[in-house]
Image 1 (cartoon, one colour):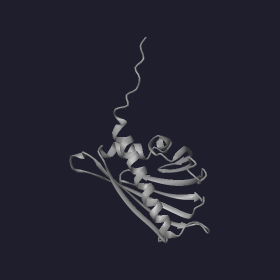
Image 2 (cartoon, rainbow, N blue to C red):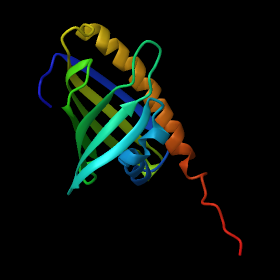
Image 3 (cartoon, rainbow, N blue to C red):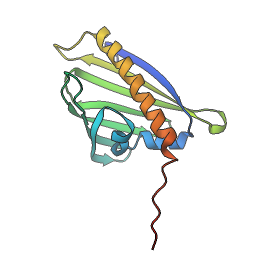
Image 4 (cartoon, one colour):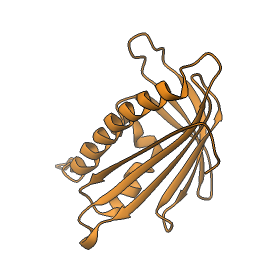
Length: 162
């Protein structure tokens, strides 16, 4: 990943097999159900394993809703996904995210790691303040994803009686 001034690294263990974790966390249209911060996730284009998509956040406190476009290269055999914002949105001048997945022995769980490299936009927080915010928020989002993915199999399709 290219060198940018800001960097975060966070990891969580999700107690589901690799395939389930990878497939659910890379289903971008599902993200509003897994993340607490996304109001909307729209896939704009698919080209092989590259997806271009638009995310919109909920407004939070004094922070307005934000919308941006990113590309994501999904590499299941390599157990990773890499994303980069192509349409920048304040507070970032640049944001790159590298997700990796590691199946635990006997596939009893999956270690999911996010590395974020970024450059704040002019007039945004300092790199240090942005790193602190991203570390806090990433941990909240990873916990929400963990809970959502671990509970996913409990969601059964409704049966229809005739």
